[in-house]
Image 1: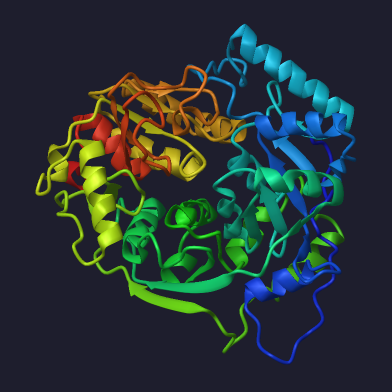
Image 2 (image 1 turned 90 degrees about the vertical axis):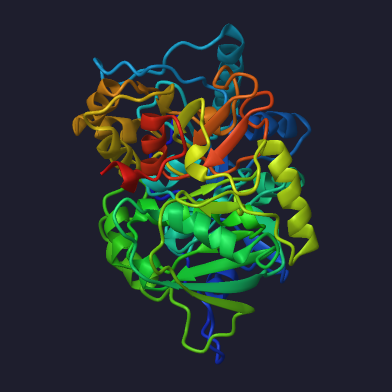
Length: 484
């Protein structure tokens, strides 16, 4: 069953919470607007599911759990292998193994039985969950959206509270459309400074992760703001929010503004017609009040920020691409131990120039960087050149792929020797044939560089799309500014 109608379960008509005397943050306003009878019970507007959780719908239904499908939507994005994209007819899912197809047929039957809308094979809107939801206008300012995906924080770019579900919470949210959570702490991060050429949201995100470190934001929601954040487009804001959980944050949120509203205007599931002016009026109120209390605050200036990459096996182990692999941090015992483990896992030595780290393969895709701006950035770097190592570009959705093809970007990529593949999670998670060989060192625009995640013994370096494209041209981790 494909999603086919706008407005369902998105909280568009939710009245604002009763005004308080005390100033409130945007998190407070959304949290209070979604509270039910119990202080810790929250009504959710949308529940996003992958294949595995759609299978859980079937099992829970068989156990007698009532499935309230009005808020549910699923993307079949992790099981399908990707392949070279055929563009003659404008849409191709490519072949899949008999086992994968049998699984997908079972999930489609579950969709039909319980009325859960699915973006699946053959649907020209399908793709990666955290790309499809925002792209279709399913996430709007002021919403509370949840999903069994580690990077639900992506949706916070729209001024929504986006939380990752535990498996133990699925039965309650399927039946009641609600979750139980205590209001988390809020850490405000204000960023100023201008990003230079070939420096993007991924570089900013990695740099911030390195600044904050693995402990300071644990269990918090990050409120991201300041001139630098406001200067990002929606694709960049989604990248920034996507990476927030890599330092232990629960989620991230950015106050909506005219860029947000312009992006949502006309999206299939966003408010439309007479609902649109009323929605805009509500959304304009989604600001943190002056002097609203926050639980922590960090103010940073990016200065002359350059392209960044991870050297270690955690996303906060970051270094500039023109830098060197660092000595383990001696100021913090836990961080020092993590750094020492990462050096071993990545087979690196402190003092090694990042530009001397050779890679075997490059991947540009994932819910962190598979949107149209990311593909444009990669294509611009490789235009007129040839890659030196196998390189995949995997768009985040079929609409992204069609937009890139309409702009001729797929020709630029293919002329450079890059595989232009069908949408899916692919080498972000390394499943169903989309994996690298044993011991491969991969330069990736995904979000999580753990060793072995995308293949046996594989080592991953996370970086932005322009830097990944530059790395593909040289076969070594490369600052794209050095190629101009």
